Length: 337
View 1 (spheres, rainbow, N blue to C red):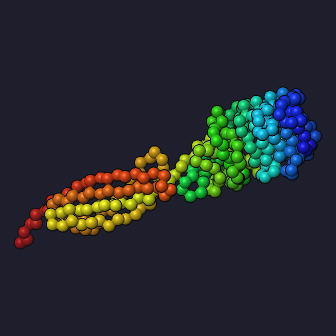
View 2: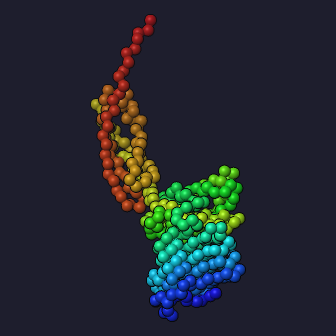
């Protein structure tokens, strides 16, 4: 089934609703396609946009819940309802479906009907982006994202997966401008996949780099068992943390004053990684001349001024500190006999 407009007028600007937009009971069908003009627009219907009830159906390259110019013309139920143990929804490139603004879930998988929900743009749906029965957040088998960072090397996501032991999984990452109200999902922009294998206890960890998300995004992920094709719901959202690399130059000015001499401390440069809102301690090395002066005199004054500037010049913090070093009291030597 390709190139159809289902549930809207010919201009794709207003709803002319059916009950269900498309309902399929046959095996091995394809709704949509990856070529130009092969996708269907399925929006404005009273119930689900697409119900796939035949085995091994493919739903690829469609727009579900939107009309012309991305205007929301929702289906009254789920965007895609899967009653098919073997369906594939979406995929890379032209296989991606845009599933948005539907009253129900973006994609709902009924009990006992695992399906692969691959790369799709799923956002702004009334219920969950992906909902595996029972309804509502279960997140069973979904990845747990520990961090999503930018600013210190390539964008990086770390996390863990807990599922069936000794199984391979495809973890797919997504970014969105904001989190779903549930705290789980959705996934507006596919970022790419990673492959992980669980150990004998069913656990696995991952670190994935070079994902194209921004500092104001949130990141989510799904996990698909490569043997069964079953895809989890979206993970909990992980807001992106910006990590900046600061170049600290201590000291820009520095003197040590003793009773007999003043020594200028040579500048040094130290690079440290800092996270926003968190204190960072930079240790300033004391020159040997200061140590020698402490040994020679009972009291030495040290003044230090230092600059901290991020590599992208986003901030420039000036700070100064004054500390006094006191030489340990000299011990009296006992006379030798």
